[in-house]
Length: 320
Image 1: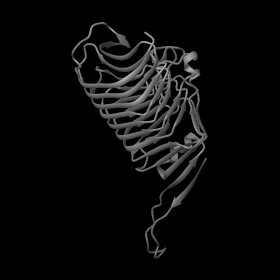
Image 2: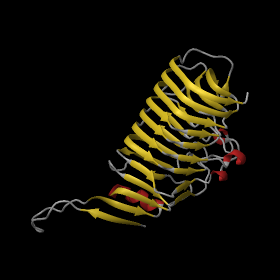
Image 3: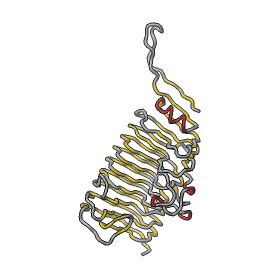
Image 4: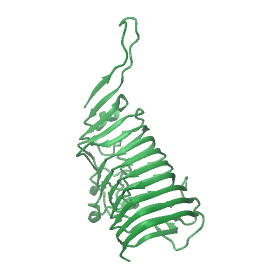
């Protein structure tokens, strides 16, 4: 069910003579997914209060009105099914998507985790599709236990992501795999600030895009802050990336650039600055041009040139 407050504009001089006024979108509170999906177009502010999303259903918040404000309140959960997802999807212009104080979005990923991630076993839904957003912001979401990849950021223009917390630490012992926090592709103007991530894969993976900044992040348990893998997609250009003032701990790698063996594309104008490493298992800094099917081949190729890269003040400890 939902409640709606409708705001009307204008005065009616004559009830008989004047045409009917169209209501402006109002403030809506939804307590079930189906009603939210059905009635989203009638709202300028959407509060999702303790939503339980049925199995094999996307909480579809695409094609929202320009300027819509969406608030996750209470606990959001999802039914179990083996499918590709996503569990949540947004498109739109000038959106503000945020979490209320004390909220959580708990995917209960242990129901899917089997140590294989997206490489086999159970089919696992991706979490959050942020595609084709323009001039929008995502703020203060508290995300728990995604089945596989969390935020897919694709084909966006000017998106800010602030204060997102993703805690998949249960997956360390229960078979979480391929739980990337932020996958960025084919986007221009992405700014991610203050993310706190505990996962089992890349904290950040930029596969393509321009003008991308990641700053003030705290990444633990995964594969580090990565560009790539670049190559083998329809868009294979990464340009003007700034990864700044962040920490990486208890991870396989620190900072990494990886391009696909035998592919084409380009990586240019990249800066890693002031990155603190702690308890890194493999490499503090790794640049590889021989990546294929999830691992190095040992045969680097030059089809994806890497140019104008600055690595400054990357410090800390590596086990190996």
